[in-house]
Length: 116
Image (cartoon, rainbow, N blue to C red; front, side, top):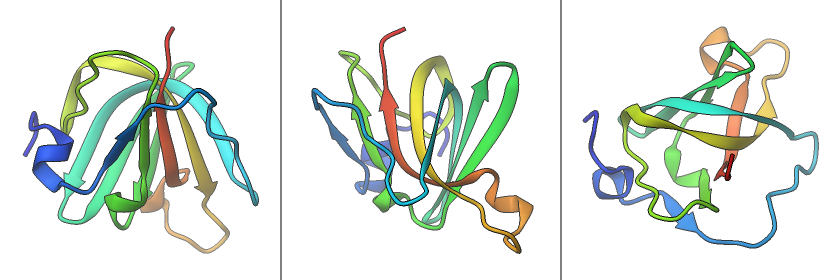
């Protein structure tokens, strides 16, 4: 449900603190922007990001494989509209030819909340 804490709602996301940022591997890409919405529909998860005025969507068939990392203290990740959109770096696997537009830019691997 929108507004609920992602961890309480699903119990499947992992939030960790690390000193080094996630590095893309095996064809993965990264983009930085404001995370404005997290759609938690069943097991699926869609992230909406505003990157330089462009809306980007990232779809995962199951949210339990997305690593959420925070370099920002007292962060609360919720499903639905983000009350204060956070600056994030999304590492993702790009959509390959033949995959539908509903998958957006690709499948998110990691979402790192970074300091502005």
